[in-house]
Length: 203
Image: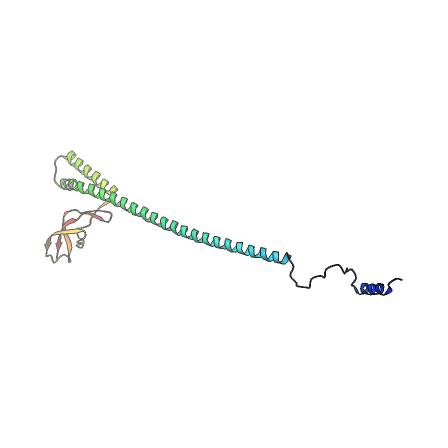
């Protein structure tokens, strides 16, 4: 005789089971329960790795920028030192050139003095006198091309930086410290004194 009670119990259990779910299947996990190998955890790990790499790259960029600034500062300092060296060398070269010209001109001044004296003396030989004048003119032209100028003296106020007073006279018709006579011309090369004027000063 069949066991009708067991069959009826089985049928009731099947009716209470949700549709599409077998009693042999495992129950689904509750919402929010952790799962092994979940995609959210993998994405979080990748994001942390990216952030770490970005931080490392930013640190590298910052270090490189600091190195670049340091090298730029070195370059600017080196450029400034070279510019100062170039200017100093140029000034020294110009100074040496001026010294050489001044020394040469100083050696020629006695010749100039003799020629200047010769052209003031009376001479019966017109051709000879003309030759002396031409030599004097040539020497003055050379001085002019070299930048040599005469120091103004006669009628000027006495200047100890340019004049050398060897005589002093009292003359009520003259002003105070006025040069009334010039015994030897003075010369300058630019702002440099080659030879002082030898003068007589009044009052």
